[in-house]
Image (cartoon, rainbow, N blue to C red; front, side, top):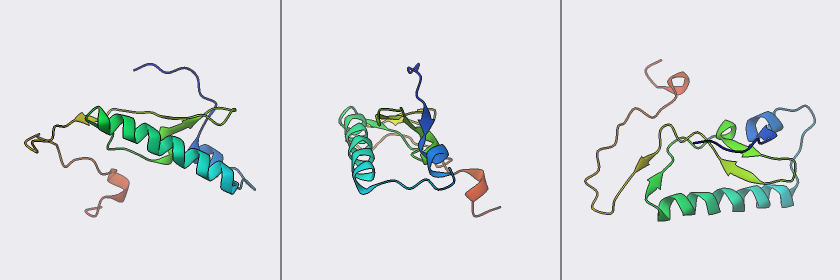
Length: 95
């Protein structure tokens, strides 16, 4: 997938010294995130890697989901084969 340039990711913005998101910003980002996830789910796609660095934000406050490398399609028959290897190794309980 190719996306247009986005100015920031959520992790990068949150890590800035003194950066505080306002309540309206948080609501706006959450609404966009949930709308994007709803679109994926309606189209039978599971993202499976939602984290701050995969949420891209431009200077106008538009949020987009990125990094669909672990995404998988699913169906309602629950017979899809999904891997359980989706945990970041840094947070794996075996480390």
